[in-house]
Structures are given as structure tokens and as C-alpha cells.
Length: 290
Image 1: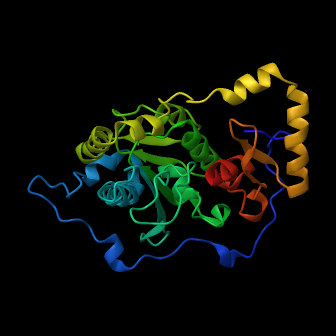
Image 2 (image 1 turned 180 degrees about the vertical axis):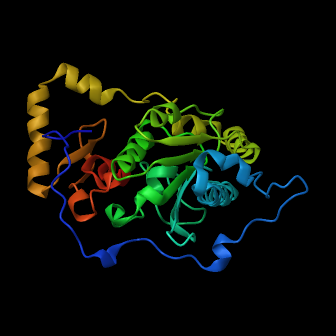
């Protein structure tokens, strides 16, 4: 991954408020799941699990339910069962779905689409938001089916800078992630559940597709060091100048380079056009395209 300059956020340029990707869900969207005899719904959730969130407990439950529902659908489609969801509690006490997304590294079954490597559960959800800076994050709960990785933890930390103060992690025994890092953010409440349904989803996928699971949580080392050896034996500066010249010609900031030294994908920084959305940074987009 190469960039000729530090990838600092550019000055944000505002778009009309009409571009906000927040919608009011139909009543059926926020319908409570059927309760079992022990008072928990079909995903093993109960309002008491979210007591730490105070008046936002219902938003936390709904966001977690939506994340687990999407994760279940993803697994049924042979995809990674890691999803993210955000639900806002309005001043009138109603719940509004802000966004629901899922891990997109593996494309849908039977689809001609390619996977999008930088779409993890959380970043996949955030990339759907055209103007995240227009969301009232101070009244929103973000939930994820698995503890966030470093990349997703950084994305949620960015949401903290926009006002997010409530996060739910459905399960972290399969992957510890960055839940503790998020909990250390000023004013942030992180509810860490040990949800049996979420644990089952992760266990099922990791047993069926062990390599894909290991790759997703960063346990698969690089398989080809040809580019590294090429750089060690040659003129690194000359190689960089060649890549940067191509980036300048394209008007892009970041390139993903293959082992043979050729550019696989490149991208401009799109954050200024998307309310500062960190998932639209040049690095994230270039790696997604690759």
C-alpha cells in the first residue's frame, strides 16, 4: 500500500442535508422478536442486558438484534457472520434504524460482484452512510456481532468524535478485538455481552471455513514476499517514483501494488465528498477495490 503523502483528512465540504442516509423504518422493522419462556427473544436478548445504557437500552437491544439478524443471514449465504448496526432513539422516544451492514469480504452466493476487503461488519455498515456527519450520534447506539478489529475500532473511534457514546459488542470470546480500547474513550459506554447466538455463528463459520476465518481476523501471514525481495534488492526510491507518477497521472493518492510491482488498484480520497466518512479514505477504497 503506497501513498506519496500522509493520508490526513481533507477539509470537509458540506453537501445538502437531503443526502442523509437515515430512514424511518417501517413498524415491522422494529417489532420485538418473539419472547421465549425465559423472557429472552429468539436471539437470546433481553432488555435487562442493556441496563447500562439507561434510557437507550431499547435502542441497544434493537441495534444488537438487527446486527445478529444480518449476521445470521450472512452465514446462511456462506458469508462471514460479522455485522454492524446503528439505531437512534428520537426525542419522542421512537426508534429509527440508521444503518445495517455486514462483512463484505466474501461476495454473495451466485453474485458476479467481487468481495470488498475493507468492508468488515462495522466498516461495511459505515460505508453505506453517505453523510455520517449528519447523524445524531449522541442519541444513537452502535452494535456489532463481534468485537471490532483495529480497523473497525478506529472507525468507531471516529464516530466517537462525532458524538457516539454507546456501543454494544454481542460477543468477544471468539476474537477479543478492541472493545477495551473503545471503553477507554471519554464518556463511552461499551456493553460487552456473551451472546450464545453470536458465539454459535462465529463457531459455525470458523469450523466450516477455517482459512477464511483466520484471514478475517488477521492470522494468515503474507503468502508472497516477492515484492519485498524486489524492493530489498533494487532501488526503492526509483520504484516509489514510478508508482507516484502513475498516481499523479490518475489524480489518486493511494495504490495497492502486486508482488510483480504492478498497481492492482488505486483511489482518490473521497472523504470530503462524504461528510468525512473514514471508510471513504483513499487507503480504504483502494484496498477495497483490490
